[in-house]
Image 1 (cartoon, one colour):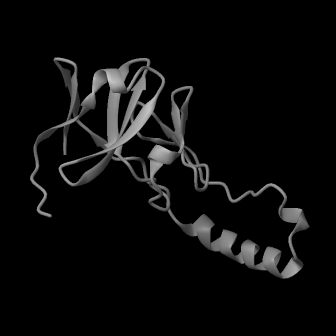
Image 2 (cartoon, helix red, strand yellow; image 1 turned 60 degrees about the vertical axis):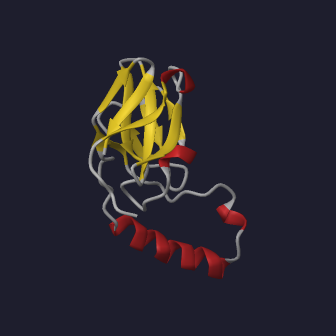
Length: 133
């Protein structure tokens, strides 16, 4: 698919009430829409750490949290507000060999940079959310 840069209708504003987020695809790009206290924002729907879809994460208190490693991003700017975590509840009950492998993986994962989420220009016109991608 050829990507053409421009303004695209992403959703109806009524479908993204304040305090919620929604993943959509516009112009061949996966976009995350958030509706915070200062309005609707649009970001690329991928975590800046391991590219997991942010739309399956959580949006609360002005931050977006990734479901994969709990990296936290500012819902206004996309800036990193909390580094990825490798903690897993119940890990102490796992076999020692698996724990050792997970520790090594954790050391590797800690080396992977966590970039801010990429924002897109957004406008609400006649009840439609328009995103420039």
